[in-house]
Length: 176
Image (tube, rainbow, N blue to C red; front, side, top):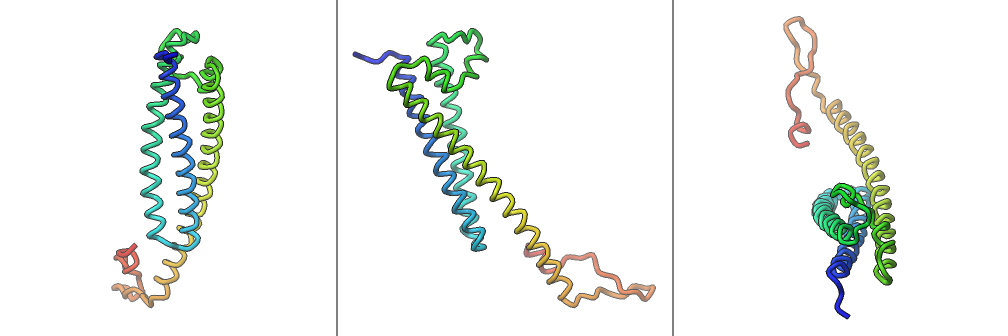
């Protein structure tokens, strides 16, 4: 039997959910690689991971938009009591899955759960990366201050005869 338009949209939604799951899992791997690069102080690898993170975040945003469109279309065709368009946009995948026949129902439920789990892991890894980044910034600030104070730059004497630090840039300020 030929699938209905609604079943085709539901199948497309399942494909998009699978893509979202894969993208979030890849994002988690990239964040973990970035954390490892931070441990090794590998700036080049950190930049590479940050670029990949941006790419994946954009792909996730695009796929999420398509997921919403498909979920809304399936919701409207099922007439799930979502009389207004806003309610149709707010429907959760789990609610949608309840109205599906097997095996679509199971696939949607499993994928939605996997996506939630991956998002939680990404969130946790991002919090760790942010804390590590803050600690690295504090450390580099201390190193910078130590280098400046050890540079022997005693400043210059002003007209009152006191030694005053110049407000100009230092080599480390120019390099970063």
